[in-house]
Length: 347
Image (cartoon, rainbow, N blue to C red; front, side):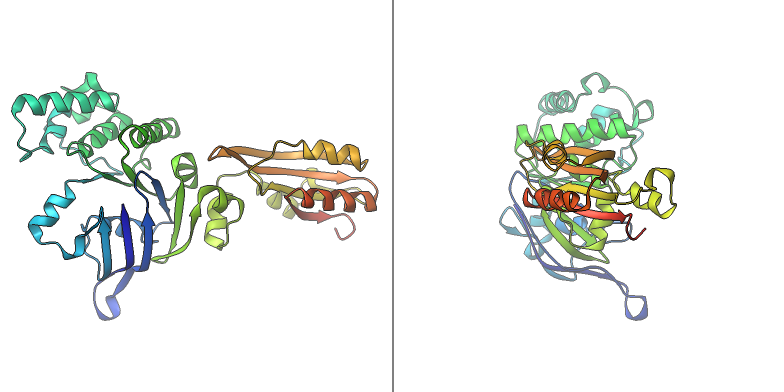
């Protein structure tokens, strides 16, 4: 549905020149929910605005639904944009118009009669769960309701693509989940391709199938969500993964020599992580029984991503040294990642 080829976007000239997007190539499938994540200033919002040419790329091509947007005339581009909806962090609603008026405004020039427009507005508001708010004004709505209006407005011209630029950043966690659930529902029922721009890995993990990680204007890593979470390659990706798990807390506690991390002779602190989609075996209890060692779990964080569990545990292992070594080898053989964080022999 979307093919970006060597897309770059520069602002300014000379010493003032800023390379906001640098040689980005991405392929996004039809009907996919694709995440683009990066810290502030990474270039992700500029990149998404290049997809509908709100920002015209300095270099590269943008194909959307088999059309090269960079080669279209102004009139052709206006028509193509009607099939690319967009929602923003701050909703961008018109305060002087009702909810229905905000949605209907997007249908100007569509050729629909007044009744057809009103009927379509009503259907869209029902679709996003605010059918009873048609005559309310934006000032009377909560943040989540405003974003639902913005989504209805973005769907007004039956788009094939929905671009979401930090669409949940202004919302509380519970409202964020409800908006993400709505986006996933729209993707499943309408088959619409969604591109989700965010700085929150938890958002990407919730509904995206694949993700691209941006840093300093470039895409530094991309892949399916499970693979990225299990084996992040770049430091910036690893930083994002850490924000979604409490398993990193142990490193701070070790540095502080907290009581929970003070070991007896021969003990280890290890971080165990899943590296396979199938984790049906009770590996920790099995290792404990088979090798006659004690495994004391002090942190655990297991979540489901794309239907498979990810995460792991932090544990203190105690027992005979040779039995611990054999148990670790057993876990590694079973595709469990094992990272020794502290060893009483070298503490």
